[in-house]
Amino acid sequence: MGPQISGNAFDQFFGYAPLVIGIVIYAIFYVAKRREVTETGVPIGQTYACAGCGRRGARDHMVPQEHAGAVSWFCPACASKP
Image (cartoon, one colour):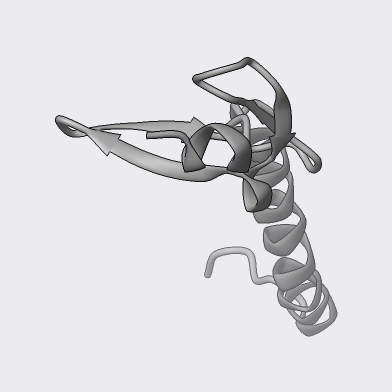
């Protein structure tokens, strides 16, 4: 007859197995996310330069004008000029 594992050792092994597996999964995701390159988003408060005069302003205050598929941003003063 071969050696047997005691009930206490069996219970202890399967008691800690979920904790160990959880820590391993957490560590894998931690390393993967730490090495991930973040996309550069639009910074808060970014300004746009007017295509006519060069004055800078927030996007909400600029007027977009489309020219053959490209978008140019103009300040309200330059946008009202013909």
